[in-house]
Structure formats: C-alpha cells, structure tokens
Length: 306
Image: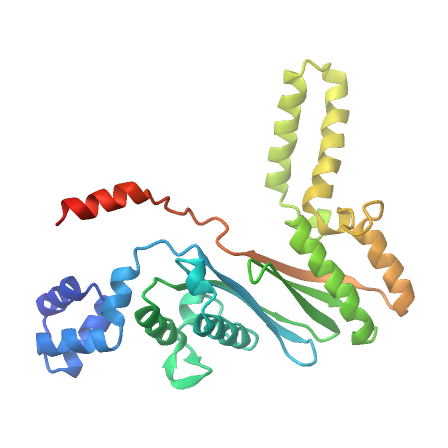
C-alpha cells in the first residue's frame, strides 16, 4: 500500500514530482531506498533539484518539410550559452522542432508528453530530463508553434546561431520557387523589425485606444491647443502602425518602400497575388528575468558554509 505520507517523504528527499514519486514507490513495492535510487537513475531527482534555476539561455530552432507546406518553431532553454552550444542540446532542439511540424498538441504540457522522435520508448519530457541529468543544467521547452498551408509556402530564418527564429507563411498560387525568395525577405524583415501584427485591422482595439489616450495626454502636456490635438494623435497613430504592423513597415532593404508595396511588386512578377497569412518570431529568453549573480557574494557564502 503506497501511502500519501510515503510519497511526501520521497518527494522531500529527492525533489522529484509527486506523480514521479508515486510511480517510483509503486515500481519498488514501497521500498523507500530503492525508490530514491530509481529516481536518481532516471535523472528525475537531479532534474527536479535544478528546476528552480533560471533557464534564460538556449536556442530557437525551426523545421520545414520538403514541400514547404508544414513547419514548426520551438524555443528550448537552458542556463548557460555553454550548454546551448552543446551538440546533444542542439540535436534535442532540432528533433523537437521537427516534431512540432506534425504535432496535434496545442499546449507545451501536452506536447512534451508525446513520444520522442529519436526514441519511441520515451517522451519529449523524458528526453529533456535525461539531458538535464547528463549536462547538469535546468532546461525546459518554453514554447512552440506549428504552421501548415495548402496554397503557398512556409519559409524560415535563423539569426545569431539560434538567438532569433522566424517562420513566415505566404499564400499564393505562384510556383513555390518564386515564393521562397519573397518569403525569405519577409522572414528577415520580421527578424529585424519585430512587428506585432500583420495588418492594421489585426491591431487590438483596446491597445489602440490606449495608445491614442497616451498620445492625447502627451500632446496636451506639450501645451498644444485642443483643436489640433486630434490631428496630432492621428499622426502619431500612423507612425505607430508603421512600427508594429508588418505591411506598414518600411522594407529593411529599401526603406522608401513599404512591405505592402514590396509584395505588390513581387505579385506582379510571379503573376499571382501574394499574401502574408501568418508569422512567428521567437527571440531566445525574451521576457525571462535573469538572475544577476554576484560572484564575490557567492564565494563568500561558500566560505561561510565550510
């Protein structure tokens, strides 16, 4: 009989998850010492103890199938750039990105429970846990997206050895070879200019209203007459669109030309309309608060503990 108290004790001793502790006790017929050993063998105890450490380094990886119709993008994090450059870590990221192109999961929690492509006897979660135990750093799959299109292509761009990854989906009846170059240009635009939306109509109305209110207060604080404030607000909103909407942005290669104009010209060249239907831009560690380490303080703590 596996009791709640024994599961709690095992969890406190190893730091492993509740379900992992219960499973280990079941497999060892309630033998506490054997359960501890089993968790250590699986790397679960070591992995759990590292789970509290900030994993803000890592890599963004993409995968596109041969006909450019299905793709995946993932961000796999670790603690240091040293591990991020490790070949086993990069292979793990590559395999997870490949699986993302065909997954049916909609959440990371569901996705990591899928069978790992390189070893069907384990899950993605197990593969990550095993590498945590081997390399000694906390790791986690932070996010993923799956792209799929029938009429058009999906293209990718990786910048800075996996610091930024982009997927762009273009809809068109044109031949894929002609579209791929266009898609690559749009990928590089997304990487460089970091748009938040494709078009103006995609901008969240609440966010837009908030921007307008900010601009209005700014104009009034500048002492502008009430009668011209509305015109100033509208002018600043137009500038806002150029910053956050892909189609309004100046093309990085020719700033005098917008992405809309660029796509119109390319549509004429290929003989079919080209439409950006989707994009994803992952930047490694964005939004993760890194813990600043004080090396002198760390050494002092170690000295005091001896």
